[in-house]
Length: 118
Image (cartoon, rainbow, N blue to C red; front, side):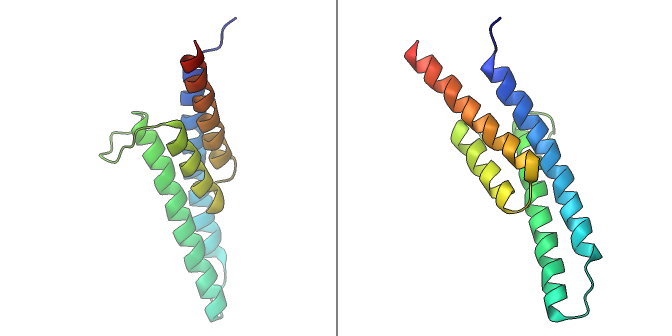
């Protein structure tokens, strides 16, 4: 049984993008739940909303790049781009979606190295 790494990369990236969107919305909802009784509370709310928007944007960018969404924003989904987007999403709260993007990047790197050696 031969595993098609390109298919796994695509599946992990699409699932990661979907989960990034989900976790981005959850981060925004969590940020809206903080009380704004102080300036620190307000700053936390704004930080959560901005982090959620960034993670949602990364998820939309990945889905658009793989042709799932028809958006004008697309990038070439190389292994490096997937790892960088995954790390950015992880920093801003993408959780398991970000980990899937990083994993897709490493699988893409593995696929590239296997093609070069054969």
